Length: 177
Image (cartoon, rainbow, N blue to C red; front, side):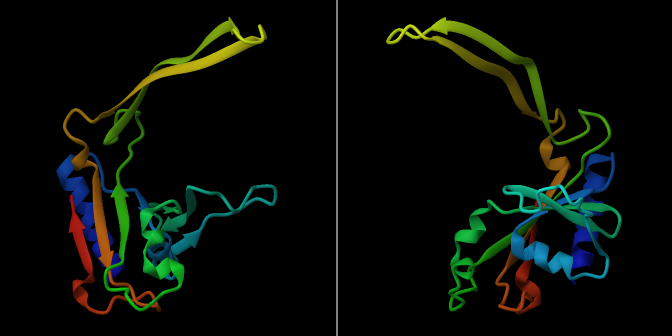
């Protein structure tokens, strides 16, 4: 089943990076729906004053006490036939679950965000109306881990989810580094 595949691939990440197994999952909304139906899934608690309709990537809960699960609402998969309500051609739909490892240190991940100038402020005068202007700029780098980002991530491609969210056959799940 799908949960077994997630566990197997999470442990493969631990073997590759020698740091730890996957501890987060970023998935499309339909794959998140499958994960949410598992008995091992636990919803993220929500306070009364928190916006419960976040856009982009939103934390939805934990799976088995070891994976933080995030829903990617801005995925390109939503533009395929199944999200428009047309269920006639769902064999070509691609859904995914990205497994990844993030350690306790800033460098213990596959991709490192390196800000070296947080914010630069430049004051100037507008040439057309002589009004004061303020420009803000930041400088940073985003780099792969020195030993390779592929050691920290694994993507599981799910093809052909039916209307019920169940794959038609066992060939519907494919893994990639």
